[in-house]
Every structure is written in C-alpha cells, then in structure tokens.
Image (cartoon, rainbow, N blue to C red; front, side, top):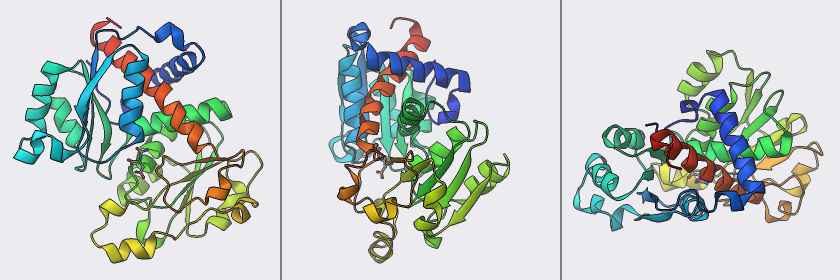
Length: 308
Ligand code: NCD
C-alpha cells in the first residue's frame, strides 16, 4: 500500500503515468464514471479549505464512489483531544482512502504510519501540499507540453507557502529548469529548501524582491497569497499582505506565452483585471485539480488492492 506525503513519493515515470491518466479522464470521463463504485473517500480537514476538499469530493463522486468526512477540527473529536493517530485508525474502518489536511507539519505522515488505508497529504502546515503540485504539474503539462527548459518565477510568501515548497521539489527532476524566487526579505524561501534542495542539486536560481525585474524572462509566473494563518502577529501580516499586486500594467512586461498560475485562494495579489488575460490560467488550474485527484484516487486504490 502506498501513501502520498510529498510529490517525490512518485517516481518521474509514475508521475507521467498519473498525468496521462488525468488527461484521459479529462477527455473520456464516461470511461471512469463507475471505476470506484462501492468505495469511500474520507476527507479529514482540520484546516479551512474550499478547492482541495471539494475537488477531492468531486473527484470521488465523478468516479462513482462516495465521500464522508469533516471540514474543521471543531467538528471532529480533535476538539475532545483525540490524536490524529487514533482518528486515522478509526477512519480506516469506515473508508477506503483518506485525504487529510492539518495545521501541523508532519501530521499526515503520522496518520499514514497508523493507517490501514492509503493516506493523501492534503496540506500539512507550512510544509508540503503534494496534490496542489500534481494540479500545478498537470496544468503546465497540458498547456506547455512538458517541464524541461522552463524558467519559473515563484512570487509572494515563499517562506510559509507549502505549495511552493512542494512544486520546487517536483520540478527539480526535469532538465534545464530555473527558478526565480521573488519575495520580500522576510518571506524568503526556507534555508532547507535553498540549501538541501536547490544548491545540493545544483539547480540554477536567483532571489529578488521586485516582480518587475523578473517578469520578462519568465515562462511561468506562480503567484501566492501571504499565508496569514502562519504569522505570529497581525502587524507583520498587514505590512506584508499587499507587497505584490499583479496588474495589467506589470503584465505588459511579460512574454506573450507566459502562464500565470495561482493555487488560490487569491486575496489581493492578482488584480481582477488580469483574469481576462489569456495568460491567466488559475481557474483552469482548479479544474485540472479534479482530473488529477481522480487519477490519484484510482492509482492509490489500484496499488492497494487492484480493485479499481
Ligand atoms: C493552498 C494551500 O492550502 O496551501 N490552497 C489550496 O489548497 N489551493 C494555497 C493557499 O491557501 O494559499
């Protein structure tokens, strides 16, 4: 049985298999409409979510399966003091597969160690968010045709933004990928990613503060919101929150074929006037999230028992 804690849990070949399956699901949804009949997905969300939880649920329903779960810690036995380990042992009796989101880094891993069903990390604190990365990869793969030779600008809260951490891990495996890390000084990428992931693997990257300086060279601009819930005080958040606002004016410096991605939710960092630009693909990206989660559920269940 396999779990998904990090994008690196999938080999490059497995990942291509998953993305191809997601492409097939997109174009032939009817073929998969009963693939998970009789199966149940549990969504255990101890932190707020719209896209991740609902796209998981939508994915399982599209596969003919059913869903159960909770959407906040308050409405689960966590409010009574139950540990994640105990909760997952119980959920294992009720469902065939589980997606878990938790504010603590490593919580999904702890759950996977006690689980008898596949566990998917749907976001653990400021650490990783592998299914958002699968969504991002499917978007890039579908719209750019691959991952090699890309210059990727990651902009905003690179310190706490778990989607950025997971995406970097995933993309360093492809040839000639370069990163431009655009953030205020206080929200720079954590040292463990700069040193242990980028420098150690000799991946070219630059760090800068002004989005305008990076714009002309980018193939992908990945915008992120400042992660309010991870700040220790409100004042710091207020000071940082509008550091970047992508406007039509700034976008005029970008290449015609640059793609703008954002995991969403957007707060202020992309002006709504940008939404109509053909380069803005963040809502399309949310749709890809359903296809890739369908592919993931199918694959993990297949690896578990070959029934799907
Ligand atoms: C992201 C997350 O939860 O980390 N959202 C999502 O799952 N699409 C990004 C964010 O909340 O900023």
